Length: 165
Image (tube, rainbow, N blue to C red; front, side, top):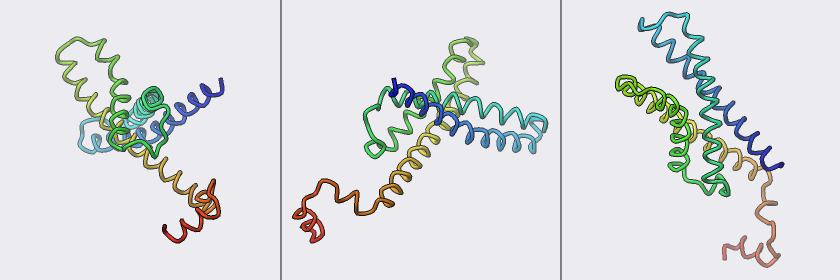
């Protein structure tokens, strides 16, 4: 049961992280479109809200997809392009219910455009998440210093390691 609770906590954390980033993107997009005169300034908050909701659902979906497909791998074992691809898939799954509900060809055209943007944002968010996770792992290893490198080595192996043999 603890394993499932950890996965749920991880999906929730990923969703919150992506929600924060996507909210900022939503605000930036709405500010730019307001300056261009496409939308009124009152819709900036709606852009942030849309970013929060889409980012949370997309991040949680990505975390679930990643857990199913790459569950046993550590972050240092995953390639950045593959991780980003799973982010794109998880984010596009956010647009899939809309795709299934709208069969109007004009709406599908717009949906594929939105789905593509969402997939690109998901890929970027996933790549950023992996980079942050790797950076955190590197810092943790640096904090532990030589203690981590010496685990499980005999005195002879430590000497050979120091001499470069």
